[in-house]
Each structure stands twice: as structure tokens, then as C-alpha cells.
Amino acid sequence: MHHVKKTLLVSIVGPTAVGKTDMAIKIAQRFRTVIISADSRQFYRELNIGTAKPNTEELNKAAHYFINSHSINENYNAGAFGRDALELIKKLSKKYELIVVVGGSTLYLKALWEGFDEMPEAAEGVRESLNKILEKGKISDLLVELKRLDPAYYNKVDRNNGQRVVRALEIIRSTGKPYSSFRLSKEKDLPYQNLKVGLNIDRKTLFEKINKRMDVMIDKGLFQEAESLMGHKNHNALQTVGYSEIFEFIEGSYDREETIRLLKRNSRRYAKRQLTWFNRYDDIHWFKPDKEDEVIKLIIQQLSKH
Image (cartoon, rainbow, N blue to C red; front, side, top):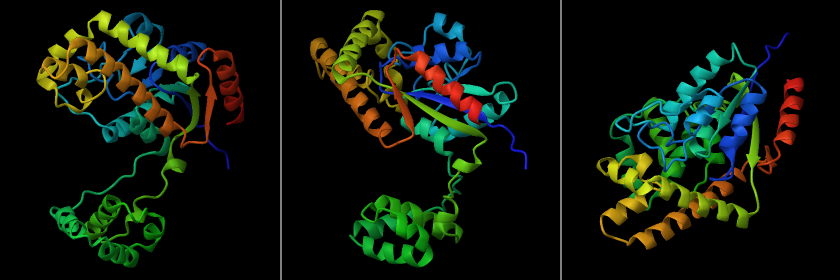
């Protein structure tokens, strides 16, 4: 049987400020292709400085998708992104054998790497009744039900995680089908092949870059940008590092100096969380950000294989 060649999706990932944008543009130029941004805040036209969005010059070097694609008045999430990106990749695959993905937003990358489970809607009120059982400390009752109705998932689930158990039973009670039947690995069904490229540098240098980048953002007008977005401060994209600290400053919680200290500290903490998440994947190929020749070599190898 002749296998249709799948498009290669090259994800450039890594902690904030490591140099992903730069690498992605170099790769896109080298292979004459396009870039899909998997960044939960760069979708929004109104967020510019605090999201380290590529500048006009960078955007002109390669076509970017999912940058400035939405307004802050719309709520966009990883599920919607997963579906939209899949449609886009199918279209782009007709023209490109390689597409670059760049970003550090873990849920959005997960959507592209693993595919999204197409979960049915849960019936009204089911979660509430399950949560009541959970709140009474009766997780054991829920586990008995799960074991009876979906032994496959029961064997896999973290049985101390009440919310996971509730989520599974909510779908089982709503549909009458095992939760595991909806959770079949989508990976093999993805119409593309994933190649994961991670960028990292030693922690001291990374933290220096993060601190320096924050100074640059502040010089560019980060405080003013946040102030102009105050009316949207409860939006998911703004309850994040770089904005939430300044909202608290505006509300009088901190002085400017303390706010800047928190902006830097929280950015460093965010980088650590990102790295912890990326370390769960053993198929990420790690490089220093200045090693684009090695990255290109890896991609060429991969292209000749598949």
C-alpha cells in the first residue's frame, strides 16, 4: 500500500525569551514555508508589548498565522485553536511539505501534538451531582462506579484525582458509553508528522535574558499598554505574567519598583514551569538557540525519512 507523505510539522518550543521567534523565522525562510503561532496571547490584536509579539519586520520575513487573528473581545481557547489549526494545516499541506509551529503555550502545543479528544457535551446537572458525592469525601463510591462502567479508564486514571474521576463519570453518565471510548489516542490519526525542537540555554543566561527583555518591554510602554487594557483585566489572556502585576500596581497594591521586581520574578517562574512541562516529553530534540545549522540538519534528515 502506498502511503501518502504526511506534512512535517516542526514545533520550535522552549521557555520564554530563549529565542524561539528568531529560530522559527530562520527555519521558515530556509525551507520557504510558513509559521503557525501557538501562543495563547499573540492571537489578540490589542496585546503587543507584553506578549513579545514578532514586530512588523519579523512578520514580513515569513507568513505567520494566528497572530493578530482575534480581538480581545472574543474568547479564544485551546480547543478552538486545535480545530482551527487542524483545518489550516490540511489546507497548507497541499502546498508545503513542512510547516513551522512556534510557541510556549503548553495547552496549545498539546493540541497540535496529541490531537484533541472529541468529547461529547455532558448533560446538565450531572457534574453537580457527582461533585456533591466527591465533597462528602466519597471518592471511593465514584471509583466503584468507574470500575464497573469503564474498567479500561479505571486502570489508567490517577485515583486520587477527584476531578479526573468526576470528568470521566460525567461523560459516562451523559452518553451511556465508556469514557475511554472517546479518549482513543488521536496521534495516529493526525494528518501530519510531528518533529519537536526545543531551545534552551543555561539557567543563569536565560534569567538574564528574561530580566533584560522585561526592561525592554517597560521602555516600550508595557505599563501604558496594560493601563489601556484595564477594562478587560478579567480576560484569560490578561490574567497572566506581564499584565496582572501592572493591574495590581494601578489598583495601588505595589509601587512601581516592586511591580518591576514581580514582573521579572514571575517571568522567571513561568520559564521554570514551561521547562518542567517540556521535560515530560522525551521526543523533544534540544538545541542551543544559536545552533540553527544543527536544527536544519535534523529537519533535512527527518524530511528524507518520511
